[in-house]
Picture (cartoon, rainbow, N blue to C red):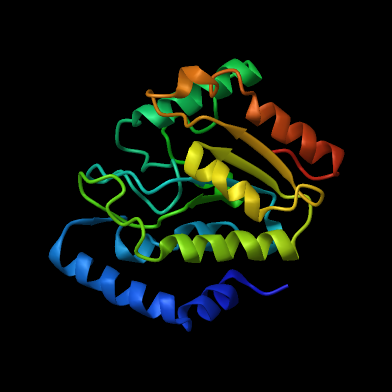
Length: 216
């Protein structure tokens, strides 16, 4: 199996990515863009490909100051948890009957256990949700999902919200496991995120396939 570095380097040689890189460089020069440039691919540095168990798919990074850190839904320890993160922590407690180990909102420990925290778009401008959609990131992350689909087995894909759920068309349901619900945002969490029990369901799947469960 290749490493993430090999896979990403292959994408970087493609025409779409060369255009994307020029556009993103310009945006970093002219606007405040999150996450910090060195953290764009942080999800891939923390979750090793040969330890991959789960993919949690978000939309784009948090667009508030100092919130995004290159991992979907995760935030640095020392800031207040955004509403989506608060709802994730609430669901973990309701689902597992105990508080999450990540009360501070930093999900680095999940990433190190094999949870790839991937946004479909990897950068965003301050205060402008969705501002880097349709620049090319979606092609990049689709190709990552396709690679995982084709080269791995028994990965649990957790898809929250309509954009993430659309990606289920890229995943072979006979080879992998897919859990879907509405997004944990306050706008939708009460329509099915709460009560989805994705954390206990995921660990149940992992036990069945003889993989170590996640310490959520």
